[in-house]
Image 1: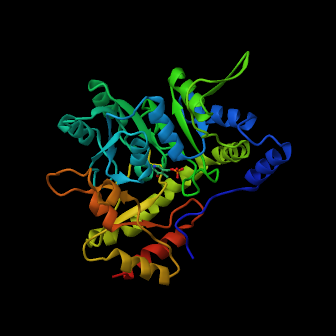
Image 2: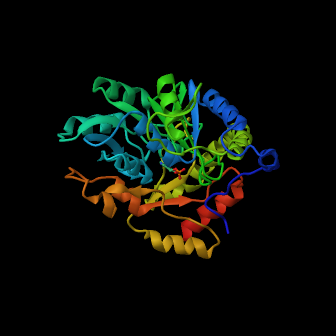
Image 3: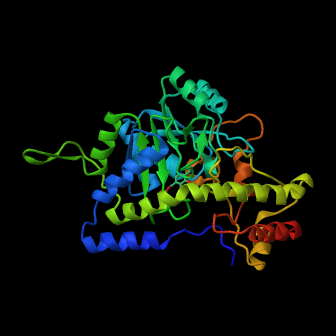
Amino acid sequence: MLRLSLPNIGDDGVEAVARVLRSGQLVHGQEGELFEAELAAYVGSREAVVVSSGTAALHLSLAALGIGPGDAVLVPDFTFPATANAVRLLGARPVLVDVEAGSYSVSADQLAEAADAWQGPEVLRAVMPVHEFGYPVDMAPVMAMARDRNLFVVEDAACALGARCGDRKAGAWGDLGCFSFHPRKTLTTGEGGAVVTDNPELAARLRLLRNHGMRRGPSGMDFLEPGYNYRLTNFQSALGRTQLASLPGWLERRRELADVYLDLLAPLAAAGRLSLPTTVSGHSWQTFMVVLRDGLERARVIEQLRDQGIEANLGAQCLSALGIYGALAGRRAGAPVAPVLFAQGLALPFCEQLGEDDLARVAHALSKAG
Ligand SMILES: *Cc1c(COP(=O)(O)O)cnc(C)c1O
């Protein structure tokens, strides 16, 4: 079976984990400190704080900004539900914003329009652009629209470690940037995540909330406020460090393979059977998703590909199409994009371990589907 993606764990990763397990230092320790320093340097942020998942990263970020009841946060309508869940779990209201048809991500214009249309009663406090599947949202205008309106920016870069927008990496632009190290992402620690920021006060607050709101002082442990346990283990950090060393090469390979897919699938796009994702040079290609046109029924295509030994699946969720978020959809003009991406998006096998012959097999099977 040609799988959607495979974690890429080398012998160096296995050995690093074994070394930490034998050391007995299992919770956040030296490996965690080193992983944080290396991540901050890689992303180009002053600070990185490693946590137990991408969802923990999002939840902790909003908590560190003091987002809570009475607040509203702009969230793209096409994403993994964790983006909106983090807002909701703090008692705030996600306001769903439609996305672009080719990048599958929100633009600064879409965020600005939604911010200006917002009428409350909750107070709009933050925007959460999602770099969906590694597409780097153009962040300079997002930062400008947010500063003009006095809004915080929390980047959901869960899929986008290593993506680049202009002269900075995804995650490094906002007040806070969040990453996931789930096995479905390019760099994995099993479960895991990180928050990056240039603001030392926010970093200190993230570290406090990550660890029970506890601070060690001269008189022992002080519990300053109720916090979480969102720590990453030391052996996961050791694994992450080996992964980070390999990441640049993996991303280079993914960019080559994405170009191969775009070439192979161009005739199907020209024939109107599917549409292809927008490509930009900084894309980190965590997932390669096409959008099937009306003539192709997704469930049927997934089944036909499975019969050929090829795994394919939907890409991400449309939040307003889910029961728990449907009530937040509101009225919308025109034909929204997110529901179409949710209904007709098809993620294809994609990771750096694949060969061009694997991609050709997928393209051939897709050309026969219908
Ligand atoms: C994967 C993902 C998350 C959640 O990350 P976990 O590590 O699984 O908690 C959040 N947002 C987006 C956009 C994601 O792709």
